[in-house]
Length: 332
Image (tube, rainbow, N blue to C red; front, top):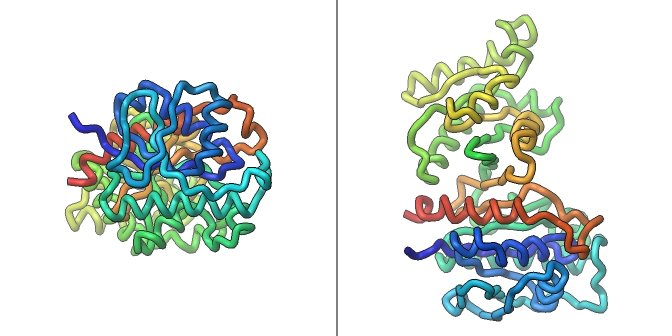
């Protein structure tokens, strides 16, 4: 059976991205589940292979079709964009930020052309991006721009529990103003459509409550009464399989037990705390609502340990495995 073909940009060269890529490609879990095309710099990847003591031969290619997907081979599209004389591990560096962007852009271009089935990304550094003249704050914004997607959806998956986010990088004060009936309805519909594209067609989506005990009918806040419950009632009347609002102190546990196929978290930390407490290393971000599939580790560049060979590759392995899991459904 043909394995899904996953593009993996190496992230910020000064961070742990190259090391987790080398460890992942060398793992039997990944080699059994997917064929990987690494997008990066040859000198950086040669160094990473040595640092983690991976038994890998680097095979430089220009197109995915040239890949040699035998165990022990790392297929690399070499962009040659790092000057080792200016390179330092663990430091903000505009050269590395620009290089990281170029790896991502190349991966997206391959996916847009159908030359790979999905992209699994590694950590980048926002300061390095800025120093390199890249005017994007992060991966999601880059993917949105380069795929023509106005508002990509973020979903976390952890041990089978799926969590979407109604709001993300805004203050709690701003978040409250974004809790509206129309926004909830729009997001739920888009999230359910995204799940179908991943092959998840059965089950109920739960909407988390915002206030303690979902507001207790206005005793602890009126958002549930005025916006959240009306949105859920209208969605049900339109035939959507949703439930809630369900208190945030219980809904994630219920989803982890299989009662719901997904949860709509109303703000950033509400869902992040739930998923990362369940399993920090296996919390994987999936960007939905785009014409291509993207998964990602949910940790940073870890500049403090970059170049030391001690970083765990569990999250990167899981990101590749999830990309391989969903790619066949996504590309049907």
